[in-house]
Amino acid sequence: MNEMLVEDNLHAQEDSTTTHATSLVKRLRMAIMTGELAPGSKLRLDALREKLGLTISRSPLREALSRLGAEGLVIIEDNRGYRVIPVSEENLQEIAKLRVHSEGLALREAIAKGDQAWLDGVCQAEAVLRDIKRSDQPVAGDRDTWEHAHRDFHLKLLEGCGMPLLLNHCNTLHDLNDRYRRMFLAKNPFDRDVNGEHAAIVAATKERNADLACALLAQHIQRTTQNICRSLAAQNIQTPG
Image 1 (tube, helix red, strand yellow):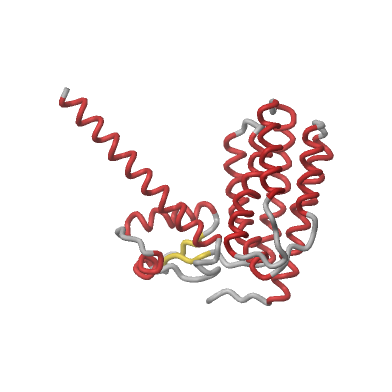
Image 2 (cartoon, rainbow, N blue to C red):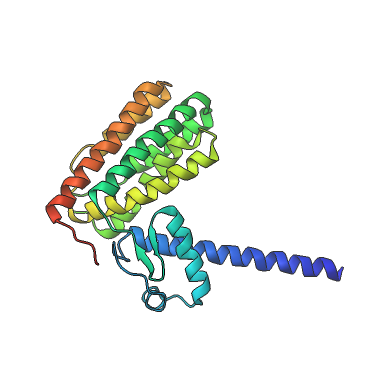
């Protein structure tokens, strides 16, 4: 009986440690994606703990930053610490190209394999996103609400592929892209019928027309990328050295 209690306590401690580690990674990821931690900025551990109000030791913070390094959000510099990955047109174009290929594959597989429950989930996610009011000058809270619904829609669209490794890759690419879109929306009004583009993708998906759905998704990603690239050039963004 005592051995069982000890084992249960060990499992509880492991689960608690895993939960805290995951929460820390999520907190740091969101700080990078929203610009709270600026592109290119150095991540000094003590300063980072103070800035984000973290009451943890350096060890879990290093582990979390290493995990974000594997995701492409943090640069790990030998003997120099950590840095938020800078923004650049080249980096954004690479992300977009990878998204077109990876999400296109996932969507094609989802259309071939996905059941009615998956299609219903896609339609529901698109309806939720469409119903969010979008002003020409959205405030931060409105942008966050839209971003969460937008992310949910795009990931729901791919879920039916039944390929966990591919979905994880698409999820990471979406995180990398989100940072750029949030920067764009913070300084620019919505400038095209995004809801219409989403609706067209869903319509083709419901018809099981993989070629059309994937082509529309690729156009959707590429148009957003072009708009953000123009915005980056206009702002002449320089990341910290």
